[in-house]
Image (cartoon, rainbow, N blue to C red; front, top):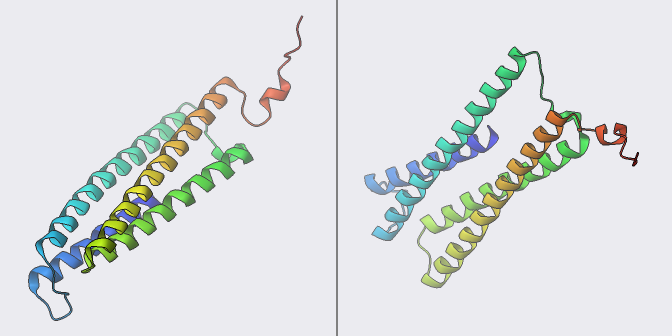
Amino acid sequence: EARSNIVLQMVAFIDERLLAISNDSPTSVTTDDSIVVHLRARRAELVVELDRLNAQTDAQKRGEAELRACGLTSSPDFDPYHAKVCSFLESRSEMSLQLLAFIDGKLSRETADSERNELTHKRDVLRREADAALEALDDQRQGQLLLESLGLAAGGLHSLDLAPN
């Protein structure tokens, strides 16, 4: 949900910039069409990302409700290692999104072509890092769910008798 809030803030910022450009308000910076095209494309990407995040959140809430209905609970805090890894990956992903918003803000203002190319490259690198962090977070959560389903989470491995018979 925190990621959704950040994405919503980014969309709102882009909407404000587009509105300022379209109204030719005194606070708007003189722009060219490439900035408007960039802002619209970035907004479309963010809307798709927001829809994906909302779908994930809804699926997670439905899954948790089904678990509770069956009398089961899923607690990611059960395993302190899992909680720390998830916290790290979430904060890394959120930081990447905030940096993306900052770079997009700089790109929306008029900049020299060399600086624009450098910022675009940095934005692409950060986007890949954010995607990698999200993928690692999903992998971590799926692994934890698998361990929990096998009864091996948080010390369960120590209770298994792995000695040869």
